[in-house]
Image 1: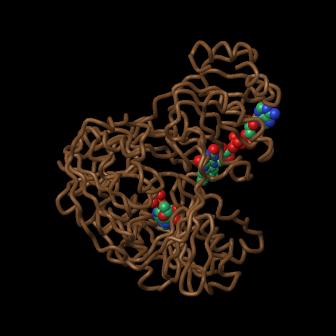
Image 2 (image 1 turned 120 degrees about the horizontal axis):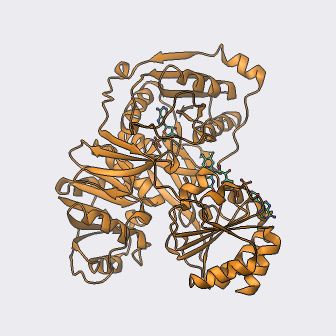
Image 3 (image 1 turned 90 degrees about the vertical axis):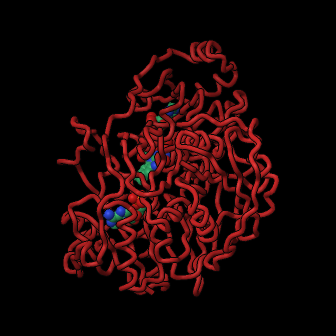
Length: 248
Length: 309
Ligand SMILES: Cc1cc2nc3c(=O)[nH]c(=O)nc-3n(C[C@H](O)[C@H](O)[C@H](O)COP(=O)(O)OP(=O)(O)OC[C@H]3O[C@@H](n4cnc5c(N)ncnc54)[C@H](O)[C@@H]3O)c2cc1C
Ligand SMILES: Nc1ncnc2c1ncn2[C@@H]1O[C@H](COP(=O)(O)O)[C@@H](O)[C@H]1O
């Protein structure tokens, strides 16, 4: 089977985002961008399934600006076989991304689509579930373990109370949580090889998807600031403070 | 506007997350609830007593027992024929379910709302809470997940809503529940605790975490949390993780021990009323948000603190 892995180019997780002075968004000029960390985990999982013989081909997809090709090259350098860039400079919301992915699924017929659970820029946590809905397929979200068993996949999910396992018929949609695996680094030879791997460029219009946003962003503001408080010199002072607060 | 709220429950009791969500829904209009589960009539009865609720829809079917999104989403889509907004708490259940509903309705979901600013306008955190966006939906219907810490709990007594039994398509035949490992603990739940003691990578291993953090938590009657690093290293289970991609908490007192204060961790706890940090590095970023900081080796400070309380 084929595995489709959608990867998003986002602000690097080590960068502290700054709100633009005019309140229209977050300043991304000259900011380090990387693959969404959950998507690295998704790529890794797809590669492991391929290495275990459960899949033959891993296809990475990104919806975004021309520079998202770099993110796709990273996926290719990790080991993905080919990539599709759906190029647009517009902001594409999860619902529209899901519609594009649905169209790609119809062309490629993957047995599994492995996405990140959440993009660390919009923090939406929607795309995988939406894709599952649009294609009428089952979803295993927040996965910490994925086991392909014939025509089905068992997904262990990180839930609020602990862990839960569900069994899904293939094709299925899986979204990754942090404990699923530790993504590999791309080696230099593999980075070189990735430059020669196929990367198709398309547009949302090629898939007939209207990407006009449904949510209007009226304003982006800094969150209320917390100021640093006091430092206490020793445990006794801390105990006294806790008593003052009525905690102890 | 008529709203439909997903009741979070375990087929026996209504979870607190529901009560916070009801408060958010009431800001939009009339509140109806959906109790979907298996053998959950008692939940519907309790839900009917929540203050401000006009009606409870009860879908009692083996297929809804584990809230599988494949089975439950079509039920909600049917009910959305006569509701204007669907709201679920931003719990793992709500986050799993709501986007499936939204896509079936061709609606762009508004995730994790912090406030209701108007009929279709909300604030929500983006970039790990480093920015707050005000967004307006242009869709005909609303699908929303609610950050529970941002809304007070509705009173669980005072209402007397009618309970109406409904039925849906049942098992969609796409997925099945295999099993769960749900930890049961005498401790308060992380998301509703008044005091939380959290430990980080500095706690070395599961035994050290237990021996250091738990006695302090016990003394304070606190819930126990952790950083991602502590969870990844296996000191504690995944459901202890506080942060951008873990649980969002806002207790009266949050005590961070051996946690550096990465933005992803702060995203989950910086709305706590009082933050206390114990860290041996005086430059640790956690001190930039802490109300009370103690620069010390936790292996001396924490046992001493526990002893003196
Ligand atoms: C996509 C993504 C999502 C993430 N989501 C989350 C999340 O939800 N929650 C989360 O917490 N993190 C999350 N992280 C991880 C986050 O970036 C940090 O790596 C993590 O929070 C660090 O954990 P820590 O503070 O325990 O460890 P460290 O950063 O290693 O800090 C350990 C601290 O302990 C102190 N220390 C060491 N020894 C002692 C001692 N003897 N006494 C006192 N202090 C001591 C050190 O000074 C240091 O400050 C995420 C990361 C990514 C990429
Ligand atoms: N523009 C995009 N291109 C490719 N994949 C995406 C894009 N947006 C979201 N995704 C995928 O959907 C996941 C969840 O994103 P979100 O719903 O935005 O939090 C991400 O981790 C990606 O796997």
